[in-house]
Length: 312
Image 1 (cartoon, rainbow, N blue to C red):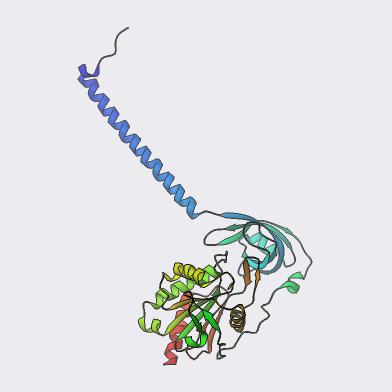
Image 2 (tube, one colour):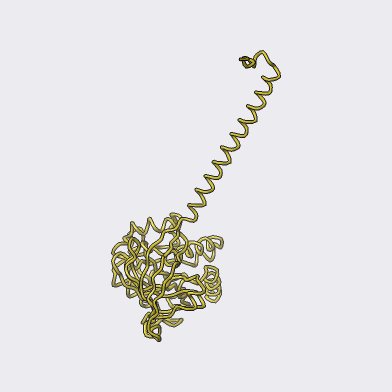
């Protein structure tokens, strides 16, 4: 058998070997880099799209076909939240046409860090007309513009006591939240809107000097000052000179919340509540109420500007 030629004694073959080796190494490096990039991209994409899924069962209370949402009186959602009545986005156009109040609904609740929705929906038709009988109302009268806001005692995120009367002299924007709220378009959205409002006010020193923000918890038993400080730091950036996160005696908080027409009740570790945000004039009287979660920071900024201009 003929022996293979030794590369050191065969210059052409030695150069060919080096050339092929170099190509192989470059290809292997490129392949490794590509694989790493794809893996990293997939990892990042997976993180962005991370979804948590829960089984939901309950009774449809009302349907808003314009907004694409159903209000459901649901049972406990294992591992997520206790039984309560609340609205859910419903993106399936066919189901949205079919669903009515009184229907029994079974679905998958899909939750991300930014939104939630219902999927895999199965309906059992209920009695006609059940929607009108079950549609909830807050049951509280809202104040009219010009109504005086009650003076209540509160504690801020540093444990410092104050009253709403002490906040007079500046325009006051007040909303109601609680730190354990699991739904991204409820309390977290209110706080994110306030953070944007605070950032925009920082661009106008005069308006910022004449405006104050107040977030009041609806869960005072859990949301002690130290809890609110940690929560608030994520939104206010650790600077609370113009934005207070407040707790206090449950009776005082309820008196303030109800004065804005806000309904709420505690259920296990959660709070079932409506949404109210208000702009209060420097003299402590109501200027405007923003219902629900569809108001935008730009709208409030415009109203603050109009209020301060009219106030002189």
